[in-house]
Length: 315
Image 1 (cartoon, helix red, strand yellow):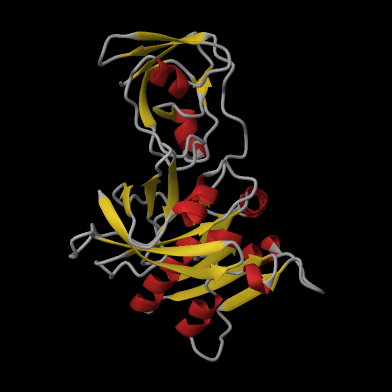
Image 2: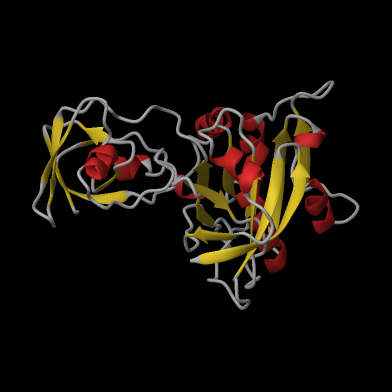
């Protein structure tokens, strides 16, 4: 769908927020805390960004974009070219990072721009009157987005909000092991941030029930499978595509003129998830759980390959 950029705001060093509204006014498609949308950029890139505003709002979406100097260019393009009044094409909201609203207590851990989906969750938890804690790490105070909004949720400060600045004098990193150990047994734990933080979080929560541990990756932690040397049979179209060395399955399909859904191309957003009919995928994504990977019922064709000579996909 199309939206208009109504407002661009400064949120922190290198972080801008973008308020998006329907071009003709009126309501947008409803969303829930943790949702993201895909922005379709003029150069053909598609990038996913979390919605940070309250899910009760119907007339706007707000996303925050960190200008990533080490990224693939999408965030730089948005910062450099998107202006107030522009019309943009976006996807409908999708939620791969669902808030468990009935949890007795929620512990939320954010690193840098990973605060974005958690901010929407906190707004929802506040609206429901639910118990929560936020542990938020940023490089410096100037790099921490939405600090004022977080403090405004509970004016005067409170024990629920813990902010640390890694690169500040006497700064320290979050002690994830201690945070997890101190969380109530019935709590749901959420983490979004850089790959190193997420890996440490997953290690710290290995003893917790899997259905109470929730992560969202913004970046892949391993390279896509591009070894090639196998065939992909498309069950619906009847075509067989050879995946050559140096190509991902997605690359091979697009080169063959086959339309395939995708966005991040890193196995993070879940847009390209495809049902596996036969064969054994070589999973490289950050979207599927360990149990889902082991079941081999679906795969992310943007980054995963094949351990068998042939894969049969529901395409």
